[in-house]
Amino acid sequence: MRETVNTPDPAVARAAERLDTARRTGVPCDPVRDLLPPGDLAAAYAVQTLLADRSRAEGHRVTGWKIGLTSAAVQAQLGVDTPDFGRLTDDMAVPDGAEIPWDAVLQARAEAEVALVLEHDLTHDRHTVADVIRATAFALPAVEVVGSRIRDWDISAVDTIADNASAGAYVLGTRPVPLGALDLRTAGMVLERHGEPVSTGAGAACLGHPLHAAVWLADTLVRLGHPLRAGDTVLTGALGPMTTVEPGDVLEARIDGLGSVRARFGRTGPEGDTR
Image 1: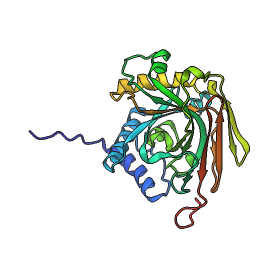
Image 2: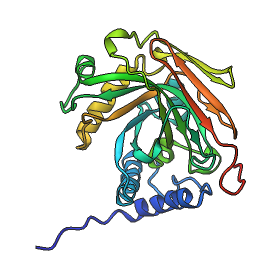
Image 3: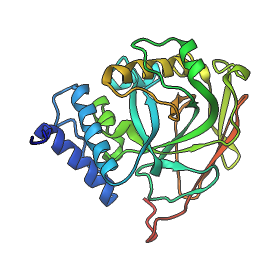
Image 4: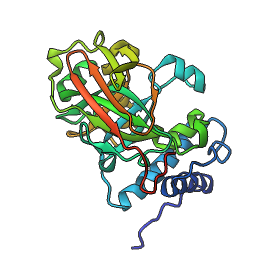
């Protein structure tokens, strides 16, 4: 029997090709919203899935998920009333304090987050906060390095979703903390550049509580047929404003109860490129 091959919608395929070319060449591209139906988030996620399939074909594996648009202000700016998500892959993971090559993430910016590492699957149609707590092995502080393949960050919700929720790289702390030892809603965060604060916030800035964001993601992924699994890392969303990044920057995030994590950036790309 002949295997059925799913052919992507031509518009989805064109958008994926535009973003993938930007990734491969290191040259940001035009927005993709002109290629997709206006405001069609389902089409944007189809682009993201197609790019994820290409990443898997290149030998990469999904290590977890990131939640974006957890700030009401950012949602209003992009004209949506819900968070979004993207996939984390093994090539995005950077050890605490290790150098991130400057050309690894296009148009890099950074934000501090709470990361959850799961011990059990989350497969219910509708989850509770208690379900997420039971399923979580531990929490870690994280710096997410967001990046946009789209020139000058000229993005709508459709653009950022298609572009894997602007995922770039992520750095996790190394001291696991059980959730029972934390009050994530009131946990304060400070993100410093070379010792100077550049962003502050708290857990309540992330949909009111980082666990609320995790519940949203768990429910959403079940509806889409690929639920959260044991071993997944979940970046629950920014605790404060993102900050720009310059070559040679060293960023350190400290979150009450979780400790600290550092993201260190190279000064140039392989050929002296400082884009």
